[in-house]
Length: 100
Length: 168
Image 1 (cartoon, rainbow over the protein chains, first blue to last red):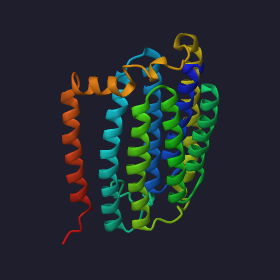
Image 2 (image 1 turned 30 degrees about the vertical axis):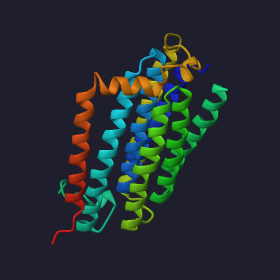
Image 3 (image 1 turned 30 degrees about the horizontal axis):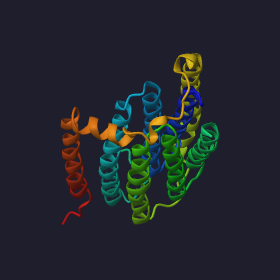
């Protein structure tokens, strides 16, 4: 008998760490990984609520989130490869052409 | 049983996430993210979502993280260097993140009685398992979104190939 609130708080902890990593990390691959961490935290919330309501729709939503995350990872990593080929760096502080 | 599972794997997930934040080298971050995903799979299983637990291990820890590790190796990513921007991110990021966490936790703890508690499902060995329910919903009422996601995956594959192709 675990309270649902514990699962939600665990998801909140993981999401907050994901946000912090997104802001603090300077490597573009690490930033991408922290986005995946945030997606996982939200998925845990969905599964906990699906369990709470005895409905399977929450789990189906998580399934679609996983599909979109897989597609996003493929395209995002291709963009990172293209970026590295042009700029020869993974540090986001050096990819600031839009700022100038 | 469920409390023990939650505490062990919840702590493991938090430790992995903190290690992701702490490590400077991307490959160490990737490996600790795999720890987080595996412990989340166990938590899904304890919440009665067996299909999602399997999909989490196969899709996330398997496919997506292998892709990440491949790209880290391919680009030979080294340790990240701290710059002026990262100092500003520390100053603005840590209080903001703490604020987000405090607000979320406050709301969840305030509503904890309305949220209720988990219970081990007795339908695990019954006639309608979790996978039966998921697939029934997915292939009847949600067939159109399911087919649209296949097109999305196809577009993503084509996009990845076009973007990563070496221009000649």
